[in-house]
Length: 238
Picture 1 (tube, rainbow, N blue to C red):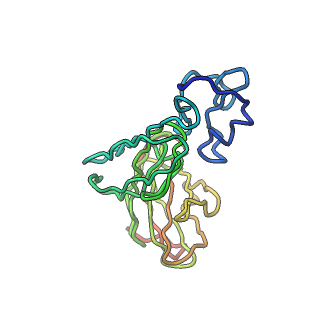
Picture 2: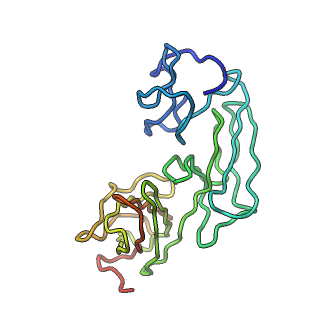
């Protein structure tokens, strides 16, 4: 943590230092001057949710940096702004990632942080690196390969074709997955569901023509799988 002395307690600083209202991983400073994360003392930020207090406190400058996260091309330039001011997040002009579609920025390289759309407004309250978020675009009734490492996630994107969509998985080296559907605002649609040998699909009520995101993470380990969507509880044969 840098930037001098911060006064207050964890409750008071909750809103000021938290990136979202529900993640529970913000950097706090107690009224005794000890920085903690979820009750554990720390000496420096180490989580994608943590924020560094800007030098000089309120009104100081902060740096928003970018990482194209496996892509190739030109990384957007860092932006130095006054703490608390808003910036417009850059598009993917100048960089790409073969086989993936750029869908914005995330506070964690593994995609498990907060999501921000390209071109959206972002309020910079501390030094931060935002990572390019890469999704695989799905086609209805076409199985698409996926792979994920232990502790990581993989994102897919599709445009709904019916009012009820079924998300199907088939297993490669992974045989146990967690699947969560989000709408275009990254609001959850239904609960995260564990899919395994005897439960290989979920159904969700959606709006036809709208974009949705699927987050897949392993129950444990690393490996491969396939995923698709359609309007039937019967998976396509491929």
